[in-house]
Image 1: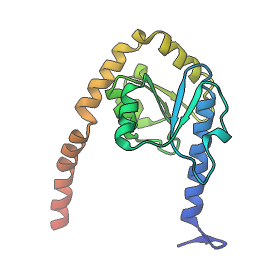
Image 2: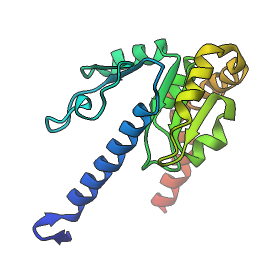
Image 3: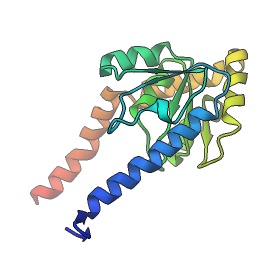
Image 4: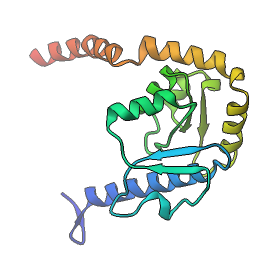
Length: 183
């Protein structure tokens, strides 16, 4: 593989990706001034959230196992999804949150824009995060306003985006591919 000096390009790309995601996540959390923000996750390379965020509304917890993370998401009113490098896809936390009735705040995703009603997901683009805190506050103070869209999003997720639905879709799409490979 290619290197710069003696560092493999794959490692350089990985470090850039970590940096971009880290900056995005810190900026997103800093934009939320009033609502309680609970962050679950351990420090990477000894550098933790506390180094970058010192806000009284932010509570940092240790990493939790996947099953416990699902329970945290199910209890949440708003779930943050910072995935700036996934521009045309989604993370399973988005679907878990929507299936649980939570509002999702997400980095821009063409795929999610096409799949989810606009009132059920708040998108932000790059450094444009200043309005997110106010929109979260509005939602928490008046949750019934987005309730119909959140219910529609929940139904969309249950119909199209569960693991069972993904497995069915995979079988449908995989059979023709496998048959082509046999030929």
